[in-house]
Image (cartoon, rainbow, N blue to C red; front, side, top):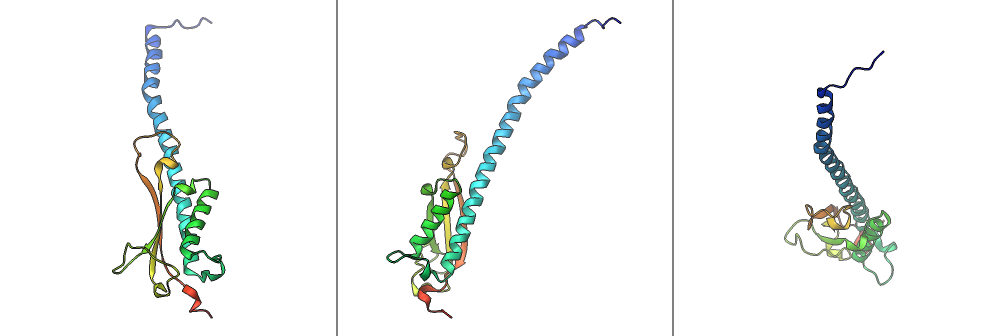
Length: 164
């Protein structure tokens, strides 16, 4: 049996496939790299949210037994957030940690967890991480942006006045 002779139509189709590949492949590659970058940002945000949630628990409990002599609950909360984020593979030293009033006239100002007057008050524990610290690629599109996570929690047993 003889093979069919190649026609001009077949030769044109091979060239068309090359052109299609040259157009579609860069777009597909860009889409895949964008999804990887988005996944990295979501992973970082999830880790930060977990760290903030744990810090909120610490700030809401009787912290007298976990804070070292000469240290403050605010410093302990901040250090615990940094340690958890660092242990998860993110740069904990790049975090910006804030503990503020979540409501009332003092909303947005610094919150002292150890102050007995703040007992049962709502506080906002928030962290920010520059996007450039977690980006896998040198992307200028998200340059200057920060990833954020926060939790509102009620200050717990300050100084142990509500002990059982």
